[in-house]
Every structure is written in C-alpha cells, then in structure tokens.
Length: 194
Image (tube, rainbow, N blue to C red):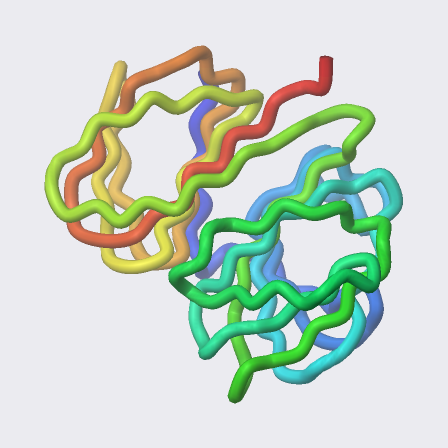
C-alpha cells in the first residue's frame, strides 16, 4: 500500500474546463493529466454563478456540497435536484447537459470524477464525534477532511489530517482504519471497472 498525505496548501489551482471559474485539484490520475485524459480526478470548486457544467465524455461524477446555501442541478433536462451541505453525495453522468442554479449565494463543492470505461467510484460523507473504525478499500482510496481535524491509524499508518487535507491510499485491500477526532470526512473509493 502506498500512502500520500496531500496538504490543502499544496492543492493545484486552475481554471474550469469551460473557463467559468476556478477548480482546486486535490488528486488526479495519471499524475499531471489534463481535463481530457484523466482516468480519475478529485477536486473542489467555488461556484459563484448560475450556468452550465462542463461536459466530460465517458466520465461519471459525484458532487458533494461543502458549504453555502445549496445548488439546484438539472441533469439532462430532468427536474432540478436540490443539494446542500447535508445532502448525500450525488452521482451523475458528466457527459450529459447539466445546468446549475445557486440557492441564495455561492457554494463550494467537492467533485469526484472517474472515466466510466476504466473505473467506478463511491463516496461517503461521515460526521465523526468519537473514535470510529471503518473499512476502506480501493485502487486508490482517499480520506478527505472537510471539517475539523482527524487522526487516522491502522496497520502501520498514522496520519493527522487538517481541514481540506486528503490522505491518498494506493492499492488498498479491505483495511480497517481508526478515525479519532471531531469532524466531517469524505471516504472516496475508486475501483477498476470489471
């Protein structure tokens, strides 16, 4: 298992694919891949206005609202879905038209994208208030600390995550990890498509 601690101060900033804002790239594979050739990508974005999302062919995307009053998404011309910081992560195809309407001000979101022909992914939002043991698996798996600080331990691993830090675990067989601290984390598990 390979382990990398990705500190918030080191996340890479770049314009959105459609030029309408800025994205903060947390992790991407292959390393240094661009918008058209990544196999998976995890990023944050500040959404300050209504408008269309960028189209990403052969990509599945999960969006999680981190802060703000919420966003209404119309996916492939369907009725709008309303998301806020208490909503479950929303998985949808990124190669269909998506339009966004903000609910009373800007939001920050977390985006997880995988190339459908190569990978699948799952995302869990967890609020932790006491020591908790969770099973994590993935090729890779990531633990993104959204609120608070979190200590993660298990099988030779000991990491302290601050707000917006991410722990990247490469080639993780099912592994129990102990979480201690008070905060909210996202568990991101990426697996090869079978």
